[in-house]
Length: 538
Ligand code: GLN
Image 1 (cartoon, protein in one colour):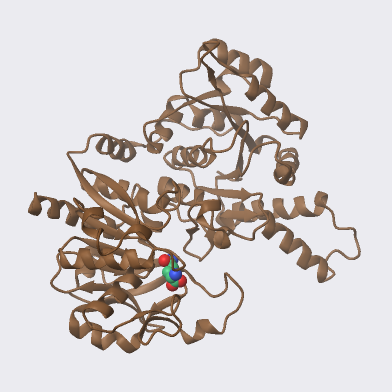
Image 2 (cartoon, protein in one colour):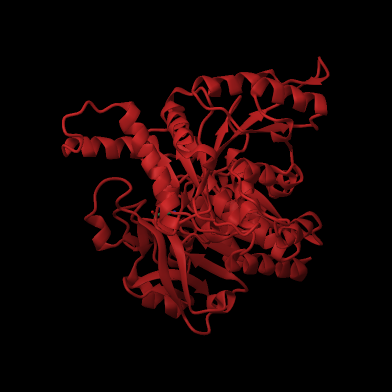
């Protein structure tokens, strides 16, 4: 294909309808037809990125290979398509205004009045086209965050209007809405969809395809009504019925011919069907597990649905790889203490201690790790989880009383986790973190080298603190071995415990790289170890 086609995905009626899942499903279907595709998320908030937003505001912050802190929808994109995303795949109002204002300060507008139209919209369009051109794509799917009618998303919708005008039939707008069922009337109602499409039309954008979230099938009458009132053909009204799992959605969208409808609108001829064999196989195993395994997720945001999104999805992928269902039990680390740890972690065949920032719940994490270590329960510590494992080992095995991370106690006598000198000099939030993919060399013959099946890996990071090298020797001698190193900066990236069936701490975030096509080896091995534990102890 010579020229990139642009697919814009907007949402109406309410938020949380799953624009990210619809965008990812479209991408999956197009990739499965052999096209090159990427997805971009435009977020209307004024923060530069979600890196400084707390999980209560925004759920998980997803990190790309190139070190961008991004919206969690980018995680869905990667998990569905297996194509890595980058900084350019997530644009916020903050980023757009920051570049326009800095250009203005440098005199870049030659005395013009700088305005939302055309300057802000030009910058939005520039960033959309930049990604399409950079990767020479067949399709760029651009998801506009928020709901049509939000004041803050107006410039993004206006940019879409302008691009539609410039691109002609090289673009298509997919609008996602909700068709509620009113029990009193015994009917599905189309009025909210009609209103949301009208709002979009008032802003100069006519959607081509309307995807309708619904909890029951749309009958022909409903489809025709939506088509008539919204200026689309009945075949462009796509039903998106509530699914058992988010991984059903590409298949459901294929049944509704969403991919063909899009291809028809942008005049792209194709033959045959998308190749979804591996996906279907994944779904079949997902829905027909042969056994269950209980794994505890110990963290401080466990009550938030989206705070550990990538970890939960990684367990789904790893469960399928092991043909089992991983029952993830969320455990609030803040409420774990010496007296109740046994009861709280009872019946678990694996314990994952979550990443995080700040002191809340730290002691509960450390106590959980001791329990896993002493009772031979498979343990995976991610980032802060690894740091807590180092603290626990220091305090209880090396007898370093009061050992801690300087993140939580700057005057600890034993700063076993500390900030590197180079990082101390950087100021400004966001700047001080080690972000994105870094190479890591694994020790030959180590457990992790066996798990990865290679000695050189690259994994994504998001943290400020590190294992303090001054303690490396003492830890190694006592059995907590650094087995993964960043050789360039001499940093410990992985520790494992001798004499324990499965005890690994990683300074990076394996969960960001687990996809349906490539479940992460650490999660796969951890789930396998949990199954072995269950077999041993039951
Ligand atoms: N708070 C720790 C640090 O900054 C760990 C961060 C994390 O778990 N992502 O090093």
